[in-house]
Length: 389
Image (tube, rainbow, N blue to C red):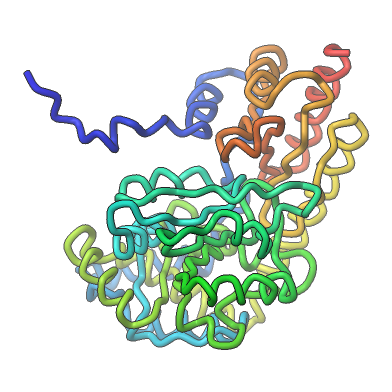
């Protein structure tokens, strides 16, 4: 019997995050710092709006793009919060930001096209580039340079085959951000090489050093930027699977056709909930978002101080809810450290190499869990590190 499996799919490696998550789910007494799952519950007003929509019988498909009022509010939200202007007519409500990433890569990649991807980065980017027929080219970002993309990195990696650059700031797994000045510094290289920008801004609201800056807000960059965001992180709505993507007209048209055939529309109840998150957020200044951000900031500081005190050099996150300490001082790489820590102390962290070769000597720890669990995890990690020495 011949092999029916697509060669690209067969070549994919299993997710390094999910492997540890599956183990922890079956390990009694384990603490997981692995998956980026907020411990906050979706605010009641958002949950209630979904319940009310079901009671009113709003259970049908929406239009392929999503509810018109939601798309209008998304564009208002982007303009008021981040000074980015896109049209509701070029906005698609997606099944999480994950669908949006897949959509744009399938819409723009021809066989062999190169996409520049920062490393370390979210585990899905490179596999999705591969599945779209493209080639993911890593931009090796370092802690010494605050894990940002620089003009020199772009110049050194770009070729005639390079079609786009994927930016993901605030960054998972490092917690790095890019400032207005740092983004402005890479724009000449992007324009010189006529690159499309794919900007994943799912952690935009979780920026601790002032307001997040989108590259789409600078100059004419919106004309060459596909902006991806969603409700999972800022509104504690991971399980609702509601994201969105805004794009220039020609790319939007291609993505829309793929979305029509593959998905049809995002869940209607989730769209009603997301619309409430925005419409009532405008009214109260997004108070729940501000409260959540402040809590994450405190937790991040706790984690950074704890790792640095153990001699595990740790970059101070400026966004998202992850720390990415180096474990090189233990003489273990990230994979060895994570495996032994899980086995000996029942604490799950993710090996940094899951996010690219640049993360080999790091581990990623999510602090999107309660302080009591974080404190207990740090006690166990402290004991583990002392025993190694």
